[in-house]
Amino acid sequence: MDETGHSPLRVGRIRYINCFPVYSAIERGIVPLAGELVDGVPTQLNRLMAAGEIDVSVVSAVEYARDAHQFLLLPELGITSDGPVRSVMLFSKRDARDLGGRRVVVSKSSMTSVHLLELLFEHVWKCRPEFVPGDAEMGDIARFDDEPHDARLVIGDAALKLFDAASRGGMWAERYPYREDLGAAWKAWTGLPFVFAVWVAQRRTPVHASLSAHASLIASRDWGLQHLPQISAQAALASGVSVEACREYFAGLDYRLSYPHLAGLTEFFRRLVLAGRVPDGSLAFLPAA
Ligand SMILES: C=C(O[C@@H]1C=C(C(=O)O)C=C[C@H]1O)C(=O)O
Image (cartoon, rainbow, N blue to C red; front, side, top):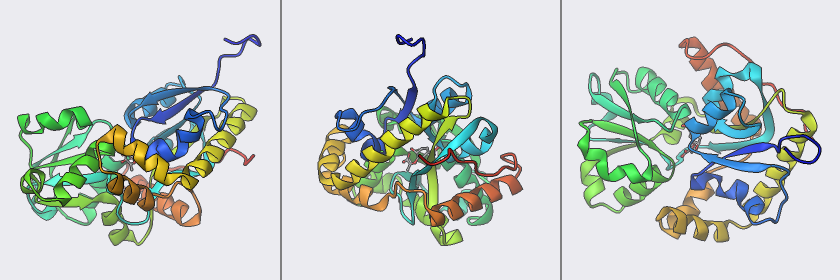
């Protein structure tokens, strides 16, 4: 509680480098944020938002679709790619079309990409593997072999690290000779960009507080996009991925939420509704500042 009797606004941040361009100016104190940051992997932030324990957060796009009645989308902000994303990857020992009945371990940190993967298997690769949730963060990579599997869905920094390593050949290229980038697979299937994550506010959070957080996030994102070389160097240190790979990664991500992104998001939700995975709903936005 502060002196006015209000609890400070709690703002979620994914601890992957994909959020560096959005939060770096806030972290550096260049852009003020009237609130405190709460870090987590996507599924942790999804749970905190669903439980009403934080006010504003980046969440898996699917989390918005599941609990839309409770949230408002923040305009003009998302984690999207129009083609390859590099950090949402299926690493596989065989061709995706040959994974029917095989064991596919999916990252427990992800919600959106797990649903996207299931759609791709059903409609594009046309086979039905057995999906098993598993740990797939950076610290888990060394234990990947302990658990029998034919393919693995990995997201975030861990995916970027494996993708970067496998692209240079060597052990990871041999272990997973088949690699599917889910952003690229969605684009090839639908012709649209894909929205992996969105920012949402609780409907019950006072609008002026959500608007203030939104304005800070937009200003911080704008600063971040103007300072990508600096942020790429910081991301390389944090992730152990080369600076060049971080630079290419940020160049492939788009942090806006404009019409083509909304078309991609709507198409994804439409397919999830058809599959009975999320309730039918519409997109409701926080009124723009
Ligand atoms: C691009 C990414 O997008 C993400 C994928 C998410 C998901 O699969 O639920 C959620 C948030 C984002 O971090 C990534 O994590 O690499």
